[in-house]
View: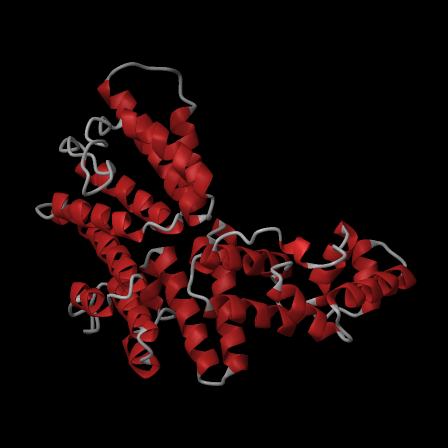
Length: 353
């Protein structure tokens, strides 16, 4: 949950790959391993894999008995999870995010409330409790309940507050239209002390900083900050912070493609993912065109987002320049565009890129 995804994945697979053993402790180890893989998949925005690993984790953690029958929670909170409340709370955090993704934030919110209640007398779980509070506040804000989201985060704006709560409070302020307050609240994610923050929190802060810079009209600074955030996210494959963020993030990523980035393939992929994460998968985007683009034309279309010339695109794809020019003309015709930027804008509207 701190974002050390490669290490978590390796440790989990090592635990699952050990010789078969019997007994409660071995089963518990397997449960934690599957839960770790679920968290890794969630943060990499692989919801189906996260769900599958959660289904394997819960029986091993002995928390299946209570995952049914509560109409208030939709059968999602393990009432019989007293032996493993921390693991159950971690599972609830994953499930709440997956519920939000599927369009059911209310059930996700109830899960998080119950998880926080289960950890109320466990000071050793303070970090996890902070993540639960932050996730609950985001769900409240997403449902339009900004006041209760701010109340839940309490004194997170004070110096020395839990960074996950402070970053979340800044996001709530921005959602409420108070950009100046958000900027004052956002802690310094580039300070030396911030290297100890969980990676998803630091990425959230960097992305919010970039959005605030863009809103203030400083596109160059926004681009620099976004590139630094991508540098941090890349090695661990942490994608969720981008793909499940608020709509301005997709515009920021798209503008970053136009300006040029060392992470061209990743950002192009994230732009498509951010559109799906915010609005759900588009139904047949290519069908919106009278004449669909071919696979080769789609590939070249993605390169048109970059600053590469036709000659450089041809070199990248091992094609002749004339072939690339022919494909570009066909793209313009099919998208009813007369120039490169117009074609890219039209393609984004259709969720082709």
